[in-house]
Length: 423
Image 1 (tube, rainbow, N blue to C red):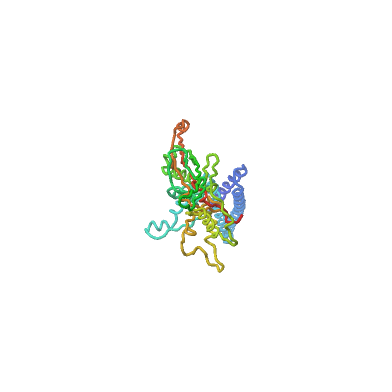
Image 2: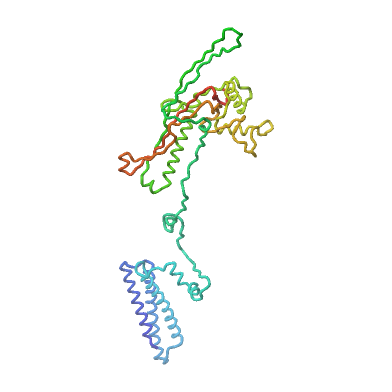
């Protein structure tokens, strides 16, 4: 029996273990691997001593019996078998040490692992079937725009064409008035300011009574409404729809202010003198106990009629109009409206304009068609200019919207304004 072969293997392993033991002692090995090397080295040294002991015993048995006894041989084989496990552990530690980050083979990607799996190889060979691979500890790809797994920067949202505008107020006061045009900066008109009517039945040959008539002039000055925007030439070139959008918003801005001026301009400075400041105040003596908003409007129409005019329209706030539509009788039936039928906006046979330009609890009734007129000197126009030197140098453009108009109120007494709540 060759007793030197096991001993030679053991010596090599012991030398290997001592090699790593010296490396660990020099401070180069991690605690886990160094501890493993020390444990294996100690076991190998113990095994060497046992083998040496069995070798001495085997030599003695050969001299005495001419062979190694069975018990000794079985014990020696057991020691040699266990030494194989120690050698495998030592090899494993060696491989781990060689595969430290940056020193060993690169880690396989998910795609490489998938093509190496048995399912994929079978699929490639057979040309049919399903390939599956369990993925562990992988990063979930999400629509986040930052961080590991964020793919949001690669997602392009669908851009709808055009620009969504905010809510726009329906502009209706001008529609109640008669239109006109002028080429001057003011409208001057003659208005009757007094009339003493002494007409009476007269006998033949008798002296006829004299009546008196007084006339006066009134002036409605043309006022300018305007505003402007600044934009770069490049953005207007790059976004073709932008200029048309600015033009539309610029025009709406003018008309929005125009409606407020026509209705409530106070005439100071460059303001128009609107309808409300010139209207006749509602006569509270016409009110009756228990009057509703519907009743109050009818009494204002009466006041216009007493003044020898016929009302052609009613203006109030959306809130007050809603109150009228929702008015009910004593048993809960709607008085004016029917929720199942579109009755339109009219009351006592006259069109109703509900506008946010009119404050809540206020109203105006009048002969809009004959009592006032809008004169346009220049209708709303939008112009684009680069005439300014600085604008030309900086590739900027100025977008200006402007209109000029005058409001003439010929018969202020044909307009009646007041509050629904009694003063």
